[in-house]
Structure formats: C-alpha cells, structure tokens
Amino acid sequence: MQFSVSNAELTQKVAEKLAKALHAGDVILLDGDLGAGKTTFTKGLARGLGIRKNVKSPTFTLIREYHEGRLPLYHMDVYRLEETGGDDLGLEEYFNGDGVSVVEWSQFVEDDLPKEFLIVHFIKDETDDDKRTLVFEPRGKRYEEMLKIFE
Ligand code: ADP
Ligand code: MG
Image (cartoon, rainbow, N blue to C red; front, side, top):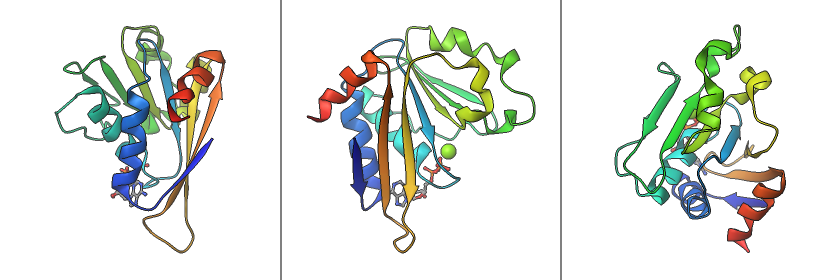
C-alpha cells in the first residue's frame, strides 16, 4: 500500500488516520533518509492519538514518551546507536508495553526488533522538495489488519 503526498501536512494527515487503528503494543518502524519526514509523520500519529503536546525529535534523548493521548506513544530515534546497537536501552519493554512504539533508524537496533511490525518507507521526490511517497509494508497479520483503516 502506498500514498503519494505533496506536502508535510498531508503526510501528517495519513499518519493521523493510521492512529485511529492503533492498539497497545503496536510497533511502527519509519525508514528513510534524514529529512524524509519520519518525525513529521510521528507528529501526525500523535495528533491522531489526541496528544496535544508538540512532538520533538528524540535524536539526543533517544526516546520520548507521551502519555496524554488515547494510548501512550513511545517515540524513539536510535540514530546515535549506529555503533553500539540497542542492547542497553530496554527497548523490548517498550515494544511489549501498553503503548505504541515508533522507531526512527530502526536498522541500528535490528537485533532488538520484534518479529512483527509495520514498516513505513519514506521516499523523496527528485524534483519536488515537498513530495514524498509513503510505502506501508505490514509484517504479520496484525499489521495487515491495521492497514484496513485505509480501505
Ligand atoms: P526525518 O525525521 O525523517 O529526519 P523530519 O520530519 O524531521 O524528517 O523533516 C522533514 C522535513 O521535510 C520537514 O521540515 C517537513 O516540513 C519537510 N517536508 C516537506 N514535504 C514533506 C512531506 N510531504 N512529508 C513530510 N515532510 C515534508
Ligand atoms: Mg526525525
């Protein structure tokens, strides 16, 4: 499943819709280069969960938690773990927790990821700075189910 979006607000709108289908324990991986729109997408997810606080990139803190919405949101950016992996971070507790986990740069904690998740690929356009293609790839039944929200 994929969407072509022509600006940041539309990326957030797609995420906001997906948020309606989220359950406790869901894991969403966001794959794309710096500036591709991963954090922007997470802002939309937060909005869809009813989180009013401004979602900021957790590049330096690695993890930010938001507890005011329909479900807790655990937003992780593990870019800084490229060298070390995620062994010491207790990621599993987040993935198995009561909230929704969203992970930027998940390839750096590959060994710690659950077997099933939704991965969203962000592909930039060569000519239009504001255009992205969002490709949703479900791994596992739960995530196929989740994407029915877009039908
Ligand atoms: P990442 O977290 O992937 O590094 P960010 O979401 O922090 O990326 O930054 C994406 C930047 O690109 C933001 O400044 C955003 O406004 C801009 N942008 C422009 N068009 C889009 C789009 N269609 N989707 C998402 N972001 C977009
Ligand atoms: Mg980011």
